[in-house]
Amino acid sequence: MMTLNGAFLRAALLTIAASATAAQTAAPGAKPAVTEGDFQIRNFRFDSGETLPALNLHYRTLGQPVRDARGRVTNAVLIMHGTGGTGAGFLSDNFGGVLFGPGQPLDAATHYIILPDAIGHGKSTKPSDGLHAKFPRYGYGDLVTAQYRLLTEGLKVDHLRLVMGTSMGGMHTWMWATRYPAFMDAAMPLASLPVQIAGRNRFFRRMVSDAIRNDPDWKNGEYTAQPRGLTAAVYTLIFMTSVPLQWQKLAPTREAADKLFDQTFAARLAANDANDMLYQFEASRDYNPEPDLEKIVCPLLAVNSADDQVNPPELGILEAQIKRVKNGRAVVIPISDKTRGHSTHSYPAVWGDELARLLKESEPRP
Image (cartoon, rainbow, N blue to C red; front, side, top):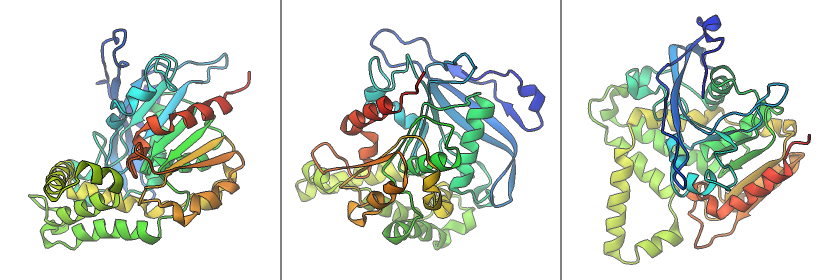
């Protein structure tokens, strides 16, 4: 759990909210206890040159940090969510229920698991909090910088046993591995590619962005009701993250398909705000770890799935770029009844064995 030791010496730069709350100790067989808290950075400067007087980062942790004789943390695991998600998503049965329990690869009894909400997401500072389209134009670089400060300044974590992430979080994993190569023992980006956003992926993001920006109802971000453009943006998101094999099984008739569509759309629309979504998708404009792949020194395992329309395997990008990573390995999971398209990243039942292998291969030497 985060401490306040030394924080007052840097009061001009940051404060740590005293509102962290911890769940009761989990009973045998129950889910691991979760601690939630907030870390505030004063006068955070974005890469654009803009600043915020106070940037709040919300986070969740499981387990406790362990330090070696030198005082360095040895068991911390950072897991970063995808576009539009939050750290809470990793507490689901299909993710945390497979990874964080007793005897599982990231057992919370032996690992210190950190699940932050990125800038613009969840309970962290975001456009819909009040600044709307006047919110600083953040990029992925800003998100990673803020995460690094949360760990090093807020949680006092100076080393990671593992950094991993899904989709946008997978891209952030590539960035962590190139920006802070000595900070981690292993890295595992899921559902991502280590190159700038281009081709159909860029089309996808432009369609989401333009649907909102070009809608008169958006009113330069000062709408009082969600603009109609959000509907078109959600339609695009649903299509690009669809799962043809599974959806055919779930909706084998026209009536079933219509029902599934209505349910899916209603849930996605209710979960999104136009300004927040706009910023989330436009933030990828500065993403491009490709020039620095040779800087990665830790074992890195990249996992994609063959039914991922956002990162389709026929591009061959992952296979080509992984050769530049000294200790890199790539796995593209074949389509099966277990894969879920782009969302396969959230089903460790499919790729958990690969994670266990990575942890074994990257075990620090005494």
